[in-house]
Image 1 (cartoon, one colour):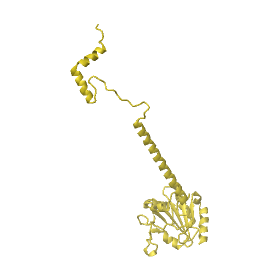
Image 2 (image 1 turned 30 degrees about the vertical axis):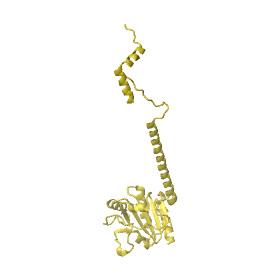
Image 3 (image 1 turned 90 degrees about the vertical axis):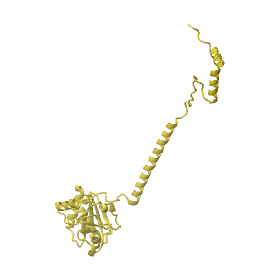
Image 4 (image 1 turned 45 degrees about the vertical axis):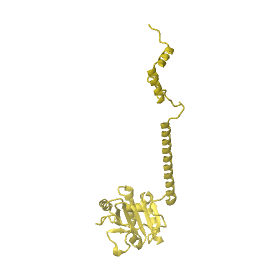
Length: 254
C-alpha cells in the first residue's frame, strides 16, 4: 500500500503547473471559482424571517380588517334602519297617508301588474281594478295584506269578510290584497272562501315592496282621505270580535 500523498507536495505541484496556474488566474479575474473548487454557499441567518411567511401574514391581517369593517357597516346600517323606521317597519304607520295604488281584482278578467300611480277619478277608473285612492275618497277604509299559501293570512281575510257584514258600505270600505300572487291562484281562493269583499292581487310584488310588507296579518285602518288611523299587526286581529272593535272606533272617528 502506498503512503498518502503529502498535501504540501500537492500544493507545490499546482504551483509548478503553468497551465493550471494560468487557468486559475483567469477564473479569478472573472470572479468565479476554478474547476474542482466548491463555491461557498451563502446562507441566511437562522433567525431571519421568511419573506413569503410575512406576506401571508399581511394578507390574512388585511382580509381580517376588511371583514371587520364590512360587519361594522352592516351593524350600523341595521341600527339606522331601526332608528328611522322602528320595530314595526312594515306597512304605513298612523298619521301618514296610504300609498295609493290600483291592482287587478281576482274576481275580474283583468290581468297585469299593479299601478302605483292610479287615476283618482271615476271617469278614468277601470271597474275591474281595486283603486285605493277612490276607496279612500268615499270614506274610512280597512285594507288587509296577505300572502297566499299561509292559512294564517287567509284567516285574516276571513275575519275581514265576517266583520264587513256588521257595517254598511257607506260607513266603511273593506279590501284585501294578495302580495306576489297570480290571478288564477287568488281567484280560486276567493271562490273557495266565499269572499265578497274586493280582493286584488299584486302579481310582481311591487305594492308589497311599496308598503314594506314583511309580516302577516297586516291591516291598515285609514280615515276618509287615506290617512292611517291604526296599523294592526299580529294574529290577535284574526278574531272578528277584536277586529270589529277597532273598525267601530275608526267609524266613530269619521
